Image (cartoon, rainbow, N blue to C red; front, top):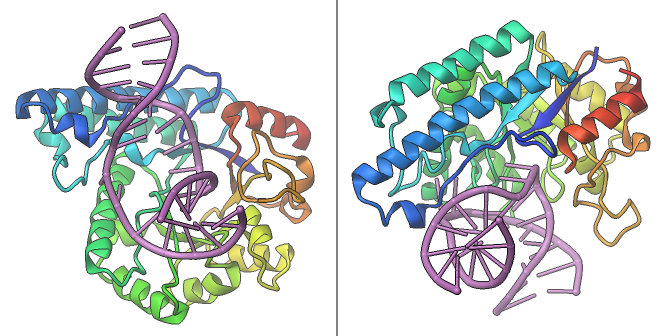
Length: 298
DNA sequence: AGCGGTCAAGTTGAT
DNA sequence: ATCAACTTGACCGCT
């Protein structure tokens, strides 16, 4: 019933995704730069394949793909087209093979663009860069069969309704494949479930419910009520939720940093019998999922 | 092999 | 003013 999801990387299992820095790449000749990027992308396709097989063999039903799968893909000066890199066509094929592999294993894949992807920003440059990044991730999602690209509401800029209006306008600029995968998640600073659920209903966007963020930024909704409303935004699709525990406990000075493991007391009782994906945001990664499976007896 | 400085990007709130 | 936090420390040049 419950599908547990691993986020981006491994704790003990030696599967690594590579990246690169723009500063270094820009010191290289164009040919050397292309070779370097080609090698990283090829290795990352192999790492993704290994990640899928590991998840399948270890009771992990979902894997979140790192935004740096194709590092610096949309960087203004170091950006590139994978197909134009040496061996790029074969690497695209390798990503598509990952998609077939995930499907045959029954694994769900997701993307979670990082904090710089903001569709509510008043700065046109920020929005444009965000749209470009979302289109890159949508293409990678299409290759690999990922069905969700999950982002936050972004900043409030002193006027939350105005920020949400800009977000709504930006949605119209997305391609079909990006728009069809987009989901919105509550954060722990600015956008609570109560802020985003009406917006998601209005724009037919699924809502990714992060219960840790909700406990850090409460809004009057109970966990049960937020859960119920979040489920409804997914229609026939499998809902996606997030779970983590506070590093220093709920009475610590800052409840937001994530713990290595999930404290089973933080697992909402009302989630137990749902058919959902729960992405486990615990720093001990697959080790934490193994422990949580034990605690849940699944 | 190991160490330390560095790394594309935005926004918020605690210090 | 600085800094940590956010899905994640990893890369790179030097010794």
